[in-house]
Image (tube, rainbow, N blue to C red; front, side, top):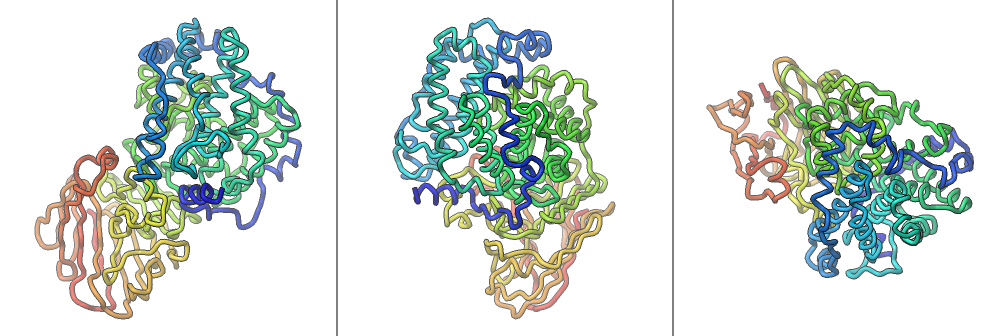
Length: 628
């Protein structure tokens, strides 16, 4: 078990965002045992209509229904693949995790496409393929991923509860619920097998083991808890075991909420909000539904802040601020959770944003395509819950959020919108979940298009979640918009943090000296980023103990910069960087060969690094440059 535990810790990067002072937000409002006592019996819990109900025919727009059905038809009579042991073993042999993940995710994508088609059509036409797909899934040795497992081979007796063991269980539980009559008409033994497998793989081990994620303040906690709770509500028929599981879930969610900052910021970035705060919402929504409204956390200010974070990080044109591990920075949030979450909170900005996203994506025409591209594989429960409110969403007035100024004091992230320019900059520390060494970095977009960027993260490999993480270039400060001081970049670890933070609207300053190891010989490096109608101005005030080597400022971009003349660098969109050529010399590095397939999919084929080297060997100075 120790080896598995270590793999999980590395996967999480850090679970250090755990509660310092326990407030137990849910438990303080609903004392122990009251929630479990209020939960309806499994047989009585009906969060959405089941397949065959007239609701799906009468309430879902015909164009959407037809799209789901047509999408499911492409999978009729398609064989069900087994998941090769040799592909599972690759993570332990060559570090590759994407090969197995692709096969696993595609199989589940196939299954939920068929289920959605059956729910929408309601004629039983898709059931033979669904039954075979369920049987094939139930026969898999373990439902999780090799990156989260301790041995090269899966073992039936080791049902470690990881993200995807839990998510597959949640998917199967939703299928069992929504297709109950159709599955029983094939054979009552099938749903009994589902209950048995979910108990063996999730319900029993989750209760019996004191997994680290139950105390964590990052995505593993609510992501697993939302699926665990789904399995309890649909598949646990014993009152005592149901109460015990729900009690543990409440404690886990309280730990997650306690660990979150009061400003609601997600230190894992918007790319993981979908499985952090949004998965917490799923838990809270299920609890409210299962208790007939008795449990309601929708008015809690901290929960509201956790929801609103996602539109506060919105840039425009589909782009989001992408600090930390972000596999994409565009159109990353799914309507099927943003709208229900906003509805739960009564947040009109959030529901209008979801309606805008749905409209831009043409959801009434392309519902199945949007669904198919959501998540690692489409989350069945989210889609069904959203469709339960589809007409409400379609009546919503679409509006793209355009917040002028955002300041998250705990997470230390500022955004500012001035005319066509958008800037975001961050403080914090280098021990955050899914951390990059990026304290003090900033990004700039112009008219909704990237200008100065954070590259994000490439394809996950074994190295990504190992002691060699910071050997990957995308994790290093040298490839963020940051100074390299005396040939030295920032160091990873929570103690490497910004200090002397000062914020006023549109302006953030901080001392970055503490983010660098002693070898940087830096006493002070105060960076100020200020946005105004005239552009984005950056000032670097520094004091070094001695001059030991090159000090330079890095700026990352995806459009080839052009040095027009001394003092001016041309960027895309007619924007320029103005600098003092007496202070800085400029070189342009084409780092496109460093991009892997994933990063090319995000940014295109090209990426460049502007290196502005500080001239001379002064140990004290002030440098100013502008994006105009």
